[in-house]
Image (cartoon, rainbow, N blue to C red):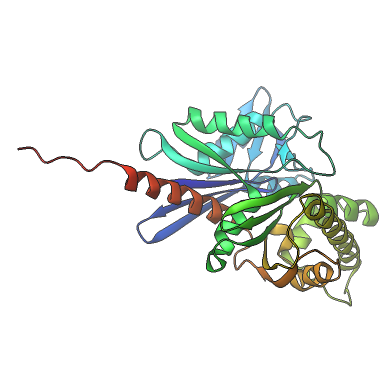
Length: 339
C-alpha cells in the first residue's frame, strides 16, 4: 500500500487507496494565533480543532484557522509562501509538521512508500531555495516512518489527468503560491518550470486595490467568483483584472521556457490544468484563448480542466506511488515452496 501527498501553499492534501476506494483528506495550510486562556483551551480540547499551545499563545492550525481569523478579526499566517517554506515564519516547520502528521498518520507498514510534491525552481525567481523546502518535507515524512519520493507538481498533473493520452502533454498546476508547468512525452518530463505567482499574488493585489483583507478576498474568490466579461461587483472586477494579468504572465513564461528547451515544432498536445486558482468558472476557456494566441512551437489540441481541481495533484502523486509499488511487486522473487 502506498500514499500520495500534495504539499501546497494553500492546502495540503493526502491520497490513499484502500481496495477500490480512494480516500482524500485535506487541511488548509495556515494558522492563526490567539491568546491563551484556560477556558479557550478547554473548549478547543473538546472539539476537533487542530491546535497547539506554546507559552501564552494558542495556534489554531489547518481548516479552522480561516474561521477563527474571521471571528477574531485577525489575519492567518502561512507556513509556506510562493510554493515553499516561508523563511519569515519561525513557526513554519512545526506547523507544517503538525498538519502532515494529522493527514498521513502512521504508515501502514514500516517504510511505506509515499510520493510528495515539490515545485520546480521558478524561472522568474531562481533564488528561491526549493531544495531546502524539498529536503525538509522529506525529513518530516522519513521520521514518521515513510519512504518518501519527490515528484514535480506539474508532472503529477500529467499522471492524474493525461493517462488516456499515454501521459503525453502539458500539465499546469495553478497553486496559491506558485504555478508549476511540465511538458511530458510518454511519462518522461521534457521541460519543467515554475512561475513565482499564483492565487496569493492575485489575492494580495486585489486586497491592496480594494481595501478588503486578503482573507476576505480569498473567501470570496473560493465561494462566489466567476470569470465573466461583465463583472458584477468591485471584487469581481478586481479579481478579473489580476487573473488576466496572471495568465498573460504565465503564458509568456511558458513560451520562453519552451523555446529555451528547443521543444520539437509541429507537435499537437493536450494541456491539463488544475489547482485551486484554476477553479473559477471560465478559467479554462480564458487560458486556452491566451495559449492559442501565444504562437507556441506546438499546437494545443485542447485545454482540459481537472474534474476535481483541488485534488488532482494529490491523485497524481498516488498514481506515481502505486506505479512504483506495483513495479516492486512484479520484481519481487517468487517464494520457493518447501519440500
